[in-house]
Length: 217
Image 1 (cartoon, rainbow, N blue to C red):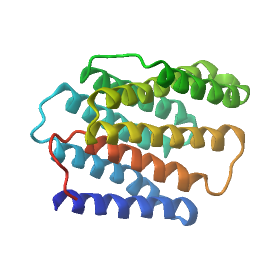
Image 2: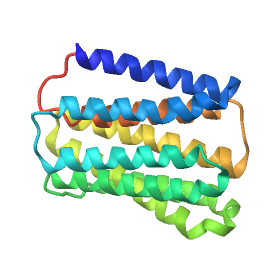
Image 3: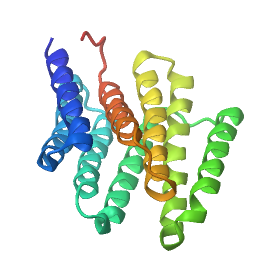
Image 4: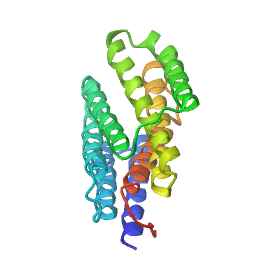
């Protein structure tokens, strides 16, 4: 029941943030963007209260870096690189979490699939990011690594919680890809809706994956 309450609060906060992106006031973005992440962080702590594994701690730390990234991205655009670095560390920590909870195996078609996605993203974005080409390349590699590890983990563990995390990483890929396209290629009206809805869905699913028991919303 408590998870349902927190999830409902996160949804309401996310909706108010998205609304503010389109209609204002800007103060609502400053309030509800980080607040939604804080609530989702609370979900991870609650569902993981009986989980003392490295997985829980790395996921929790990754969510803290997500919060840091949220704050930097709502500041002036010159702070964008700090937001990028924050989310880069978040993806690294999520990757460590996924790798820490199973014996790493390589499934060629999974690796090939995420390598292909990374190449496509690089081809689309790199011509438009002259000043930060190297950071963008590193970012694409790390987020693709995170997604690949999550699906390798699901393939091995084959349980509900590893599936939640794996699906969450796909939402993260979509969110970050749309954010990059909207910022560096061409702005489009529905971008903020897609970016924020997929971002919050991704970290919500990753937060829920910390649980070690059946989750009852």
